[in-house]
Length: 145
Image (cartoon, rainbow, N blue to C red; front, side, top):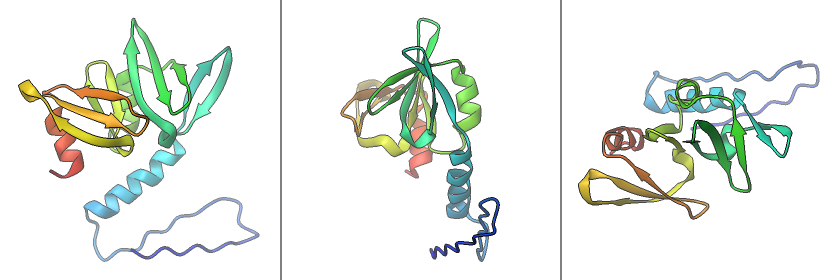
């Protein structure tokens, strides 16, 4: 892959041009990653609203009808439902791991198979999360197993 960056002083906005021989899975992944950068999640912490970048979020979780975004440092309450997060980020590096969690694939450090078809993943922040057996095929597909 070749990357060229051209700085133009008179440019009002960033323009990304992708040149490829054919549209393949690698090109689609690059485009998906670029598109996900445009999307931000609003999170509330200590009465303040923060704009969270998708790359900073380790996972989303629903607990007692409230939804949260977990980053390396903090846990933010979010107003989005998990299905909305799935719609927004599901074609990228996020995937549903259980009925109550959506994980960021880029934050997974290790994967350990468990009894009953489940999988345990360890995130970069050291947290261990389970992937329900019904979502393991999605994980395998996203990782290219």
